[in-house]
Image (cartoon, rainbow, N blue to C red; front, side):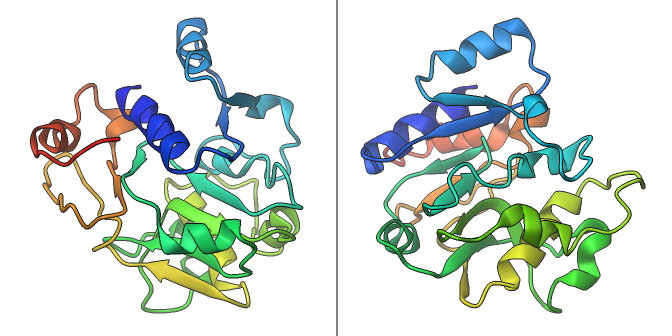
Length: 218
């Protein structure tokens, strides 16, 4: 929750005139109460249309869009922005270019063959322009929703969705590094930091090292 609280604080500071939402599912009462303290709009995904027959990881794509008439940026709850990114700024101003971040590895679950060869994409931070119908686009990619979901199916769906847009750009790791539990990749030139695995660990060593690194937080 510390990482998410910092993420919300930084986003609001960097982009104060935007609408913020947190989607959630199957939380305990005390966890939901902690989210309410962040003062953002909350969306219970279990009450939304489950167009994917999602059970685990692909729940992150529900709802497909909150406001299809506006550009939207999707972030995992372990991504902390440090500076305004040009692609985010352009999207807010009406750009039609989608974006997504680079990954350390190529991990797309059963949708690997739906993503152009050679690409490594991390689904933790991506943006879509107004007008992109995520539900329709994802339905054209998904196959056999009755099979068991694989851990990286969500990442594969996002990678396929982004790379099917007319215009898209992949933000390199140098700008948004993946900070795993055992890795230290902190530079003041970075725009954001993705603390992968924080949701599965009581204490994330990468976050601990980040706090001790001297990188200024907003």
